[in-house]
Length: 188
Ligand code: NI
Image (tube, rainbow, N blue to C red):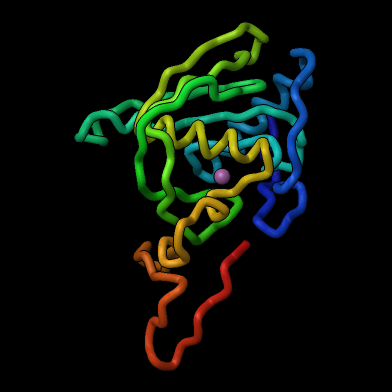
């Protein structure tokens, strides 16, 4: 396994449509292992292959389902998915997302509340995953990366984007923070 560099938002590789994986082999499994190591090191809830400059439809996820109130008690769900496709979606949720390719920012975006995803697992076996809440959000976010879409593309209004300061507080990007300060440019 090896740590890979995570590309950030100006990188053109993040804007390309990734290609379907045609066959499962050792190099694909090595890619998945590197992605897991890179995601865990960051740490992040998910990573898509284009974020490390590989234009293939592969995602990894390590995210709490978010379906029960006491988040502390939830075990994260770990997924390694090849050629994932959303085949059903329903409902709506509006909430916060961040992205390892847009460090230091979070934004509130609208997503489907429930999704069903069809994919291969790392051995090429077809799997179907039903998810809702946070896990559904993570799946939609990572699958968007495979089509060159970043969460900042989905912001309904600029005020939904926040910069994180050193204390982890959310500072609105598109509001003046004080009379001295100018508005910051959007990071993508
Ligand atoms: Ni992301």
